[in-house]
Image (cartoon, rainbow, N blue to C red):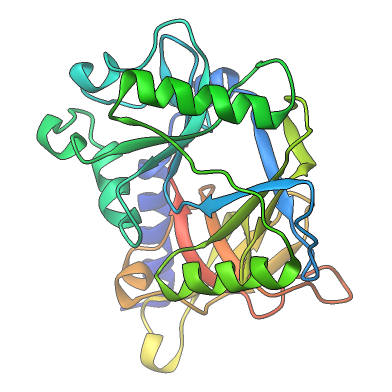
Length: 287
């Protein structure tokens, strides 16, 4: 196929798949203010923190009436599932099907008409009580009490102290070897705050970040006639090309221009670009 024609088709597909500016703006305006995790140092001392497994699910905020994705879009969950959430109580957590089930979960929550039977397996794993008073240790106790009172789909993410760095790294290895993503450390004495804060840290064998797709670069050799790499722009305005980690299907139908994708990497270069970057997945509009 002619490369110019291929690029034109990809551009048209990208435009067709993007949210309209009005819909995208509405989702952003509705996006809840959440606490976001920073990266934990490799020599992390867990003293003073409560630790839980980092779930590879879909972040969801319940304001007491409506369940929304982190990006502001409304989660189209079945009415019976939503009816089991406590009215008037704000919750923050992760929709989760289990380790290694993100793709299945992603397909499930993207459906405009929810599959009530499939949603029976979705847990809402709680790790924060937005606006709650007191230190995080007390908010975690209240979350456990709420989950015990209401039952499924509410699950309070187990929070536990870890005595040493050695014990922390041992647990991290067990989680990753079992197909998990990593650990999250939350300062036990932290009040409720929002934004990216050092009171909440994620510990994983790799780092991840989001960036905007600004160009599709044609491939060569085995990838001639399809995508070779994505040109990405980070929130800080840096650009780089990412071709590692893309499947043949993703090269045939790449993430559209303007969409957000998540990539994994290990540290930064002296110029601030990700080292050993690899494509992970596309972020859905409104998530």
